[in-house]
Image: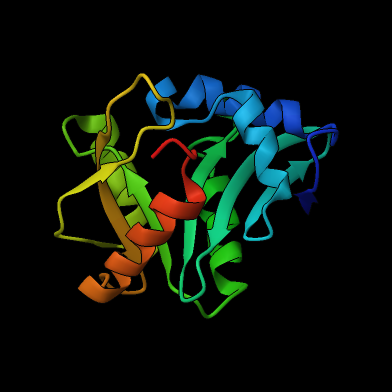
Length: 175
């Protein structure tokens, strides 16, 4: 069952934070106090998929006007490699006609290669531009990531528009 997590007081919010902490390095996620602040933004949505009592997955995403940016997509470890991620993400993608943009780590080993293939199977395309995710934390550097988009590669114009929004609205205010 899909549900919206609408505030930091939602009982699903701690499960989201815990999954992000165990799934993303610190450089690729917000601190809990920063994540809580996103509920005040009209363009940010946190969705959860619950199977029985288990929060099976989460997707934190941004409405960027002409595209949706999937900032954090995370599946509970017990649900990985069982079709949950494909089902959840496909359902979400069908919920809008807008293109989707997301970041992945550069392919350097079998784990990152599997992740890229997962998104390719869902119709995502690789983008050629060199991309660095702005730092989530003042003391950290930008992180080199790859951009993938659906249903087609980004145009330079779409990328520049996203990048401006990322630097002014999506990322922490110290940029």
